[in-house]
Length: 143
Image (cartoon, rainbow, N blue to C red; front, side, top):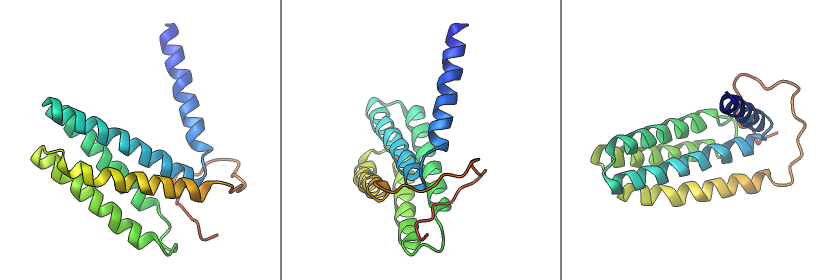
């Protein structure tokens, strides 16, 4: 019973942590999650655990699609970022279809650089937080 309580408390803590992140922080959080899943997929492919790799790769694709869809269309870099995310999703799909880890070696450095760039954008930015988190947030760096 204590385990359930600890797990519930941990889930609540994670939810509150995500709700209080800046828009840049949310993108970094998502990209770091994708990078973890890509690492899991790479290890699973190496071990022949194809179902595990499939799950990690499809979750990675879904997360990148969600990040790309959350970018503010009025922000000038959005178009280029979406094309970059599309490229990464395509390489993840290729890896999943072929059960080949090689495309993952192309995706990981790109995602690391993007996470670092968004992390740097968010440093030193002290924007006021809304009282209640909206149901769906977009990333708006334009102002």
